Length: 519
Image (tube, rainbow, N blue to C red; front, top):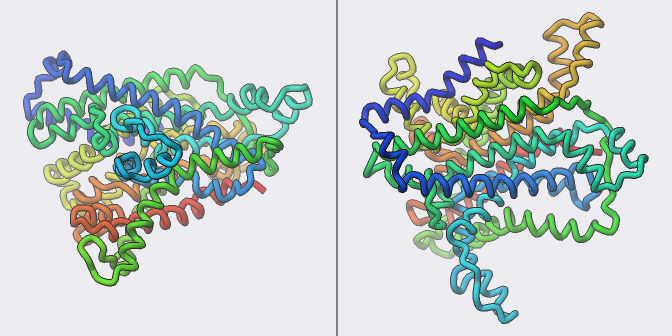
């Protein structure tokens, strides 16, 4: 398992190898680049945005997980389905919706003008970028924390309540320490996603390192590749710091309970319901409403006007392709990173921890860099050259880009398995494989499925790798949305986006949320 973990880590460093190789070929002057103010300014903005979004999503994702899993919130099963779905929206869709909403004559102005409010806040720059990325990345925290909370036995909380502790104190002193590893895992993913995002920050005018990489890609490749290397090394450093902090944390063993404690909200029921509905409404219903407006115009148009034509039949095959690559990538990603998660979660292996850092740090590289690295290796390497523009290589690209999401969730899932259960099964004569399949894997299932859900949702909206590596004629809903935007077919793009949300909803419920259902 240790050898396998090292090999996996080396494979995940392939995109870094491409970036290093390109810097050598282009003769990038990294010394001058590092000393340049034009590098430090966007790097500082990237880190500022990354830490701000991470902090807000940690609070929101943890709170939503507790409310939908551990309380008697009205309609909590519906909220469990809706809460992860904002992750399926590309960030540029949310940025576009925000710009349109706050524009002159937009929806916000129509709502507040009767109240005498005429001056709307400027949502460009840091403020708008923070808001959009918070709304669309909190599921990275929500899913692993929700999975962890399903494993918490009620006895500890009940004992604390019997000793006179108030519910808020019970949450902060009993519940939070047990889910803290899941919170950190999700927050790290949010941070890496934020510093690598290009779409939202570009539209909202907030210049980050990732935005500079894309801007220089065609006109100054040496600078673009140099900045990509700096971004990757920065991410690797942050991951190593997080791993060092994680090793110092005492491991908390809890077992899955069939009857988790449900906390009554009592007088807070209505205010909490309003707050949850308002937040998820902004994150999900708002963009869906904008898309629905354009889809309705296309579906009810009498003529096939420019931008209003809709061909629903053309979306059937891309929808099937989207579901196919999402499910396959999720399964492969979990299988690939599980040995590393097992060694780091159960044995705290330093070698496996280094391999895990390689897996996680790759998530900070922009998707187009990872896709280009595989194109580079596929063309130049005789062994994998035959796999260029095939489904297996496309799956590899997805796994390399999103494997970090499965890795952190799998690590938390492994930590949730008490050693005593496996030891008890061993004393009863169960073999190693039988203990894993009948004892450990069922206990890990909620956390593993949460990681699979993150990978699946991210894969279904991925664009650069699909455009560069997909087999000829292999369209997905993401490429349909992109193509419709390129043609100015707003209605077709809106219908494709709604189809993406619908497919994601069904698969998220089938793969993840059924296992989080609390009776």
